[in-house]
Length: 418
Image 1 (spheres, rainbow, N blue to C red):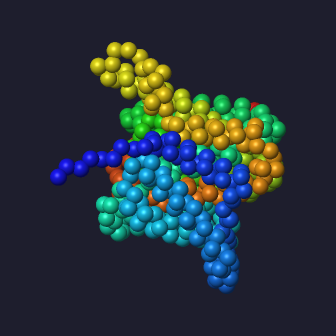
Image 2 (cartoon, rainbow, N blue to C red; image 1 turned 120 degrees about the vertical axis):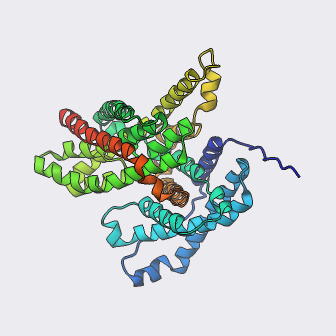
Image 3 (tube, rainbow, N blue to C red; image 1 turned 90 degrees about the horizontal axis):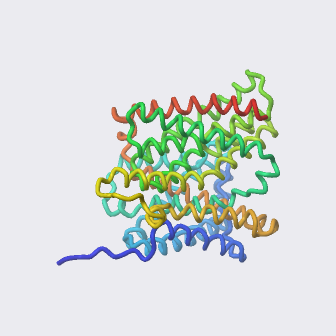
C-alpha cells in the first residue's frame, strides 16, 4: 500500500513569521501570557515561590500557549502531528529544568544563560539514552529558532540605538565586515567547506548563535554543522566573558572603550551584559548598544548571504546557463528574516512607547523560551562525538583564529572611536 507525504500548507519560514506575529498581536491587544518565575536561592524558596500554586498555573498557561502554537505550526508545515504532541511535553519539561537551574541565584550570579544548560541537558540525554526515531523526527529545532528570531526583532529598537550614539553602528559595521571576511578567508585556508565557513564567519563577526542560525537558514545548512558552530560559540563565550573585563582593567582602558570592545567581541548577548556589569554602568550601557547595533545587521547579512549562496550554487551548476532571476533569489531567501525586520520596524516606528513598555517583558520571556526549547532540541539530536572528532579540529582552529582576530581588531576600532 503506497503512502503519500502530505504537502505543506505553508513554508516553515512563513509559518515562523505567522506564529511570531500572532504572539506579538496577542500581546499588543492585551492577551499577555503571565511570566512564571524561576528565581530561587534555597530549597524553601523553590518550594514557596517556584512551585507555588499561582506560579505553576502561570507555567501551565505558558506551556499550553506554546503547545497550541507549536501544534498549529507543525500542521502548517505538514510534519507528524501525533509525534509532536507526544514529544513536545518532554522537550518542554527538559527546558523547564534548564530554566530552573539558570534561575538559581548562585548560578545567576555567574550570568550563564539558560540556553547553555538546555543544550547541555539535551546533549547528555541525547548521547546516553537511545531515543526512538519517531521522537527525533518530531524535534522541530529550526521552527523554534526561526520563531524566536522573529520575536528577537521586537528588541531591536532603532531609536534607542541612534539616541545612544551612531558610533556603535559605525563600529558594528566595520567590525562585521572586516571580521567576517577574515574568518571566511581563514576557513578557506583550512579547506573548510563553504557552508560551514559561512556559519563560522557569521557567528564570529555578527552576533554568535543567532547569526549562525540565520546563516544556516539562508543557505539551508546542515543541522550537524550548525550544532558544532553553536557549541564553539557557547564554549568560548564563557572564558571571554570572565577574562576580557580583567584584561581591560589591566590595560587601563576607559569604560567607554571597554564597553565597545566587549559588545563587539563577545558573541552572546547574555555574556555581553555579564562582562559589562563586571566593569561598570557606562561599560554595560556601551557594550549593550554595540551588541544591539550588530543585531541590526543580522537581517541585512542574512539577505546578502542568501543572494550570494543562490548565485554561487547556480554557478556550480553546469546546466545553469543564465544568472539566477529575482524570482529564484526570492524563493531561496529566508523569509523569517522578513519577520525579524518587520517586528523591529513595528516596534521602532509604529507602536507607542507605552504599548512597548506594557508588552516587552512578556515578549522577551516568550522569545527566550523559544530559543531555550531550540537548544534543548539541538542537544537531543546531536551526537556529541561528532563535535570533537578528527574532522572537527580544523573548524575549531579556524574559529579560534578568527575569534582572536575579532578581539584584536575590535579593540583597535573601539579605541579609535570611543
